[in-house]
Image 1 (cartoon, rainbow, N blue to C red):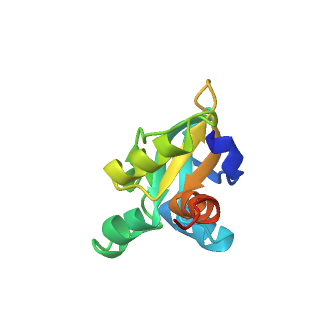
Image 2 (image 1 turned 120 degrees about the vertical axis):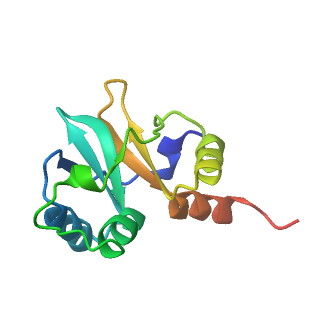
Length: 129
């Protein structure tokens, strides 16, 4: 089945140059584990909860004085909505990702798939043997 069958969440995006403090507030207020970073509507990076812990909290980074570029993962791996669920699961496992951006052919974010989405699908569609 394609990833679109999981009803991907609408991505929350911030622009390059957004202060880290604003990125954190966006994640908190939307109760999400990641935001996508865009430039000219094209995906250029991702910031996750893990980035906040390892690059902000652990290092004491000043969130008001730094832009998202200081903590984002550049050129994140991504998939398309017509890619298969099994492919996303493999990509998450191999890469250690909890979120995978979905983009269109222009590279613009269209959705986000989380481990929770995939596990929910699997738990409701795998029968006991």
